[in-house]
Image (cartoon, rainbow, N blue to C red; front, side, top):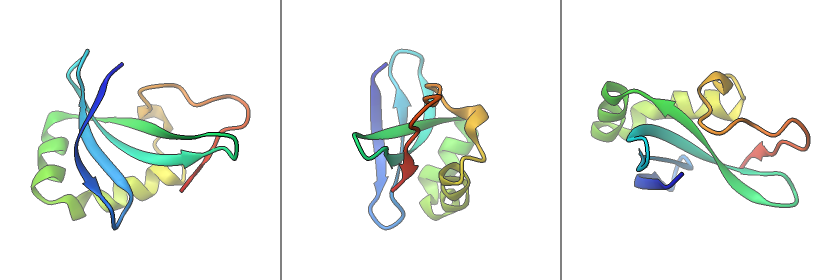
Length: 88
């Protein structure tokens, strides 16, 4: 998978982009397990991506839900079953 970030919020710590192989859109958040830092990618549809790109502050609530692991059903890469990181 090749993730292409098209927007990054330094204030709210999330990215918006497109996975190039599937052309799926995502919102990603940084995560740390204590051993490694990585990103979790949550799939969003085209209209949602367009809305977030036009008004990035509208994505903050969704990003916060991702940090609380409330949107795990949308993860593009399954979360580890052990030692899952926590949002940064």
